[in-house]
Length: 420
Image (cartoon, rainbow, N blue to C red; front, side):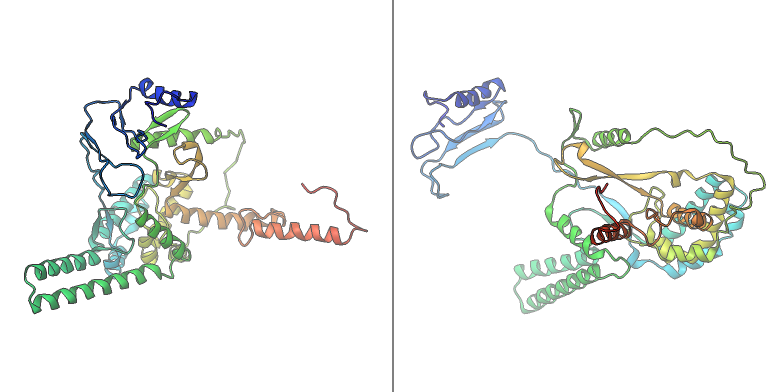
């Protein structure tokens, strides 16, 4: 309704009065509707920001009963620089030479004679030095590029644009042919990259991941909103939002348990574990290299492609950590990623944490778990379905549903009154 109209309802008056309460000024002083009413408004709490307000009642730019409004906003804006990061270009990695150099290192002199933390630090230093030597790095400039659009596509795109520019300047037959050739090359490279990006037998969940990568590249939206809040506290800066997530996730954990149990470790050979190099190599070869790595920075593709070259030093590290009871700091840390569950994305409480831990540590845990199950498997009830291989919620539900069906069908001998 026109804000200058005298016959305003109570709700209309409250709406108009809210302008002055919030310090807002209405800059449109002419009718914006064909019936002579001012239905469109321009509000600001700073008179110097808005200028040259024009209501163009004679314009036919849009087919509407409202007139277009033109105005200028005096405000300086800055384009946010896209974060740049360097990543390894595994497509051009020299895996053969990297494996040969890893096999030449005398790991027994580097690991066995040191404490666990120092041994791990030296292992990482040598590994990363060789990885940087044999795997080139590329700079990723944007998170919104298509997931398959790499440096080769970009080079082909630049050639196509240069050829098109030369043809516009001089439309000779030679320039026209060059333009058509570069166009075709660009299309062919893009098509090939898209196919390579989609089909990869190394990751069974690849199709789902590529779908969401495509959605992300086309949405132009950040995964987290610009402003987020927790318990009435609002934050916009990345570090401040991370601190809010840290505070909320910390609140969800219970306090550490304290057990006063006397344990005698003397002459205990029952739990000696042989960290076999072949077994470690097989576990590393089976790693899903597309999964995110942890704080140690060792990518799954490095572990997978150098599995048997790294099996020997990792066997020494696992043995040293197990026998000393000391775990390197990198193995105890995790990169925590917030995942939206439901509700408003602005609320910190609507997220759950996902911990990305070291892939090396996961391999160590896998060996410990297998050895532990071998020793205690006879103590586990056959009805135990959690955390066991080839058992899950589905296998548990199969037995439960079978018992219910039997009791319903054989009501003479069995009866079910309550299901809990």
